[in-house]
Length: 421
Image (cartoon, rainbow, N blue to C red; front, side):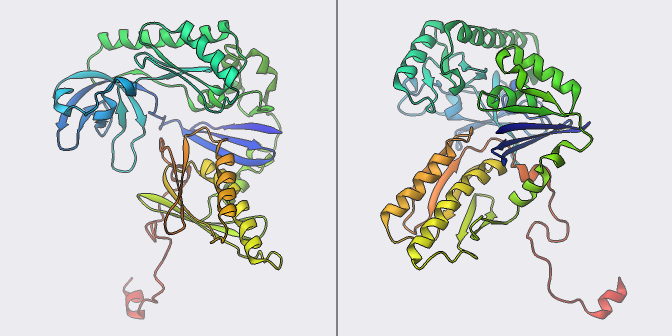
């Protein structure tokens, strides 16, 4: 059974996604820290940097947003110039324009914004100026891909672009038309508001976390959606009726005395999943290390001794590790460059199978992932789109004693020093 579990408190909302009893996705949103990704702003260019081919845009946040030259050009690659023009020919200081946040402020950096606008709906993503149609790669049947592409071509107007989402499989023209029409109207409202307000100003905010996850992840594959807050449950039910009334009966209000997350052991699963050292069922283990630039995962056999064949032991450990790595990358919401140090394998066939297993498991991830391949040193390189701050950073704060190093001094202070304290 696949379940979506939503726990609501006054200042924080948490969501957990369980697949056959295993925690695969977790999200948290605080009342004081709503996400910026997907939001539209009317911004003002405050600085243009020719040397970086970028500009800083004031959108009313603490730090100015970053707009790169690629995000100013036409969103359709075929319509972009072969050689990028200088950023100074596209933007000037004081210029006002509509931008959309594509990446949250992370660390000391401001948000990254774009003029490649996109509005996600239940069945499609609407892009007012993209001038192309795309179909989710997860829809594999060629006949269905062709049908949906033709359907989208009938619905779009002028230079509009659309991406057909996976959940659109088997849907009718009327259903798709209703989805596109509501997104088209939302874009017109953004344009109207932009004409009425002065920069910097918020023009449109994306749905809250629960509604966003219901829109993107609540499908026929989810058997049950449990919410322990009556008011939030009513909002979710109303939202679901607008696009998938046939799924309404799968939403349940949790009223038992035992806390919802305790009942389904969410905190227990989460605590195990975020450890630096995570154990595999066979007895092997993974070690996770995070740096500013990338995440490194080391695979070890640990307690698993296998049979009499060393290569087979290594191969089975790596296969199990590949499956668990895919799950934990998704659960931790890790983005950017990821390097996996699998245990060395002697045969190319085993290496290929490990990559295939990892790619197969990563298909379940709604965030874009790419397995780049093996490096010359035998490490596997992959990337995952970085959009928001990692779950771990939202749940925990840096230790004031070790300042995030995970180490404290082993030197015993002199007695005189202790007495002075």
